[in-house]
Image (cartoon, rainbow, N blue to C red; front, top):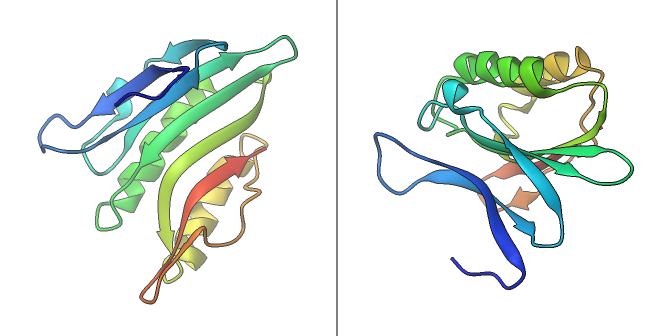
Length: 146
C-alpha cells in the first residue's frame, strides 16, 4: 500500500492464516518507536501492533487491534491486559485502539470486562456508541481510551 507522506510504523501479519493482520501508518513528519507485542499475538484472537508517537508534550501510545468476534474473548482480554501492563506507563496520556470488535449483543458483559481492565490502568473509553452500523449489527470498531 502507498499513502503519500506516510510510512509503515509497524504491522502484525497472521502466521497461520493467509490474508489478515493489523498495521499502523504514521505521517512521515512524526517521530515514533515501535513496541514489541509479538509475544501476545494470536491469529484472530488477539492481533496487535503498537507504537509510541513522540511529541514535545507527551507520548501517545497507538495500538491497532483486531479480534475476531467468533474467537475466545477471555484469551483476548488476558493478552490485552498483559500488553497494557507492559507498555502503559504514566507518561502515556491517550491510548487509541482500532478495530476492537464488540457487537451490541456482546456489549453488556464483554464491554464491562474490558472496562474493568482499562480502569485498572486509569483509562476509560470515550467512545460509548457503535461506530459501524448496518442492518444486521452494530459494531464499535474505533475506541479511544484516556
